[in-house]
Image (cartoon, rainbow, N blue to C red):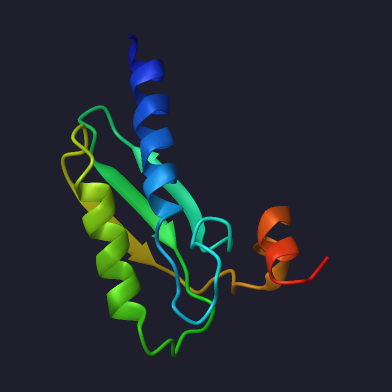
Length: 107
C-alpha cells in the first residue's frame, strides 16, 4: 500500500469506530450526528480530531470525548490521538447525515 492508501485505510477505521460512539440521550452515533468536523492522520499515524457537541453544556461531554479517544487509540495502526473540542461553527441538525435525520424522524 502507498501512503494515500494507508491514510484512507486508517481514516476508514476511525470512521467505523466513531459510528460506535453514541450520545446516550440521542440514538444516533457521533459521526452521523455531524459532531466530527475533521479527521487528520499524519505520516506517523497520529490522529487529530476536530469535533463538537450538540450543546456546549453537555453533561456527559467528558465521557463522550474519552470514548472517542479510547476507541480511536485502540486502532492498531494509530499512534497518538488528539481531540480538539470546538463550538465554532455551532452544531445544528443540518449537519446530520440523511440516515440520522431519518432515524430521528426529521425527514
